[in-house]
Length: 148
View 1 (tube, one colour):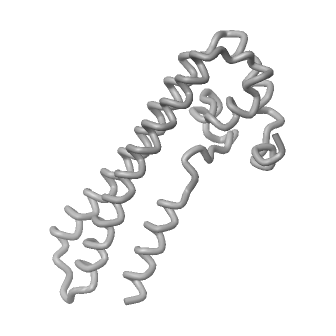
View 2 (cartoon, one colour; view 1 turned 60 degrees about the vertical axis):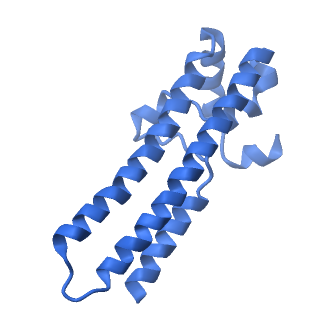
View 3 (cartoon, one colour; view 1 turned 180 degrees about the vertical axis):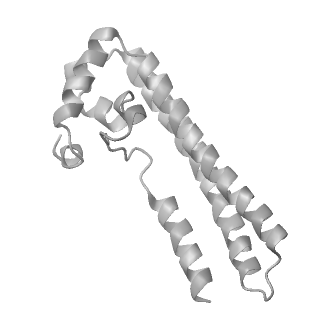
């Protein structure tokens, strides 16, 4: 029972993670090359985003949020099935591993969906805007989200 609760809490916590939450971890070179939508929107005036860029950001966020919501819902269902399977004695190893693959596959789809959005956002920026974003990110912290 404790294990099932732990799995459900883990799944629930992953569903509550903010879509745009993104730290520029210096140890992660990929994150250093992409820009989260909340950073872009916080500095939209300074970046001189045009209407088309703002609309593209909104649309990409809408599509990503919708897709991720659906994937996380599926992940919750599949995670619950996995938890139920792990309660049996003996555990059917083959079935559990197959179910775990489903859960991890959904997690991969969530990450891929986020990556697609970040790539599209970067691709729509001008070279000048990208240089500005690089500077802004150097001093940007999550607390800046609330203060701007």
